[in-house]
Length: 267
Image 1 (cartoon, rainbow, N blue to C red):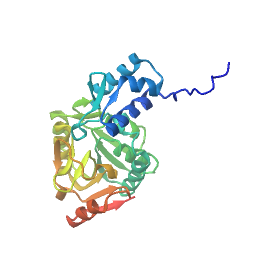
Image 2 (cartoon, rainbow, N blue to C red):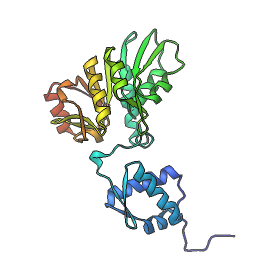
Image 3 (cartoon, rainbow, N blue to C red):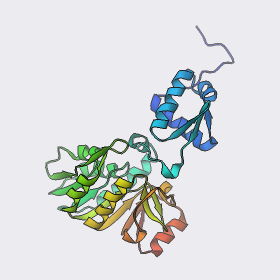
């Protein structure tokens, strides 16, 4: 039976696509309502309320009467599966540039994150005589598993479900006995005055130890992180040797980093 003329059906989205779209709409408009979302996506009010409840639990929205408003982005700890869908092309280029810095026989630390996992994926594509990778990220360890010439050392600790990372005293004790040639540090914010930051204080504490354990520190982040600040400070800008970011980075941010002696690689 043909569809009635003059009517259109809302585009059907996968659950995760719809939820990402809801978050983006809330950030753009300042709020979303259940009624508007029902009309937009062609699903029931019960489904939309379930979406909003899930997004609130994830720390992405705060529910209000009849709808939701965005959480404060500076304090937000976005789940890794959502982070991995954002600016993916830029993160892949950054991952490729970072992997090219690694020399055969080195020991490197890969911090948890949606950009550092792209480095791990690039490592998989290369042939190594030997390589040691220290990581606190379950997904990165899984990416590198099964490679005969790549030794993976996982730090212990408490699992943070939003980032698939291990943190806490056990992770810090394990790291205190190790050293590395190079750290690839994923960050949620990189402000040229405050330094590099992340929403979680435990993650920041472990990251700070990673910085001290490494001869060279390379921050990897897409340009949207430049100028942003989050809750917990990992390290001042002076502790960074290199920043790899994408070509949309603001000229002022790039100039400020270079003035402070940081090499900036644009990809």
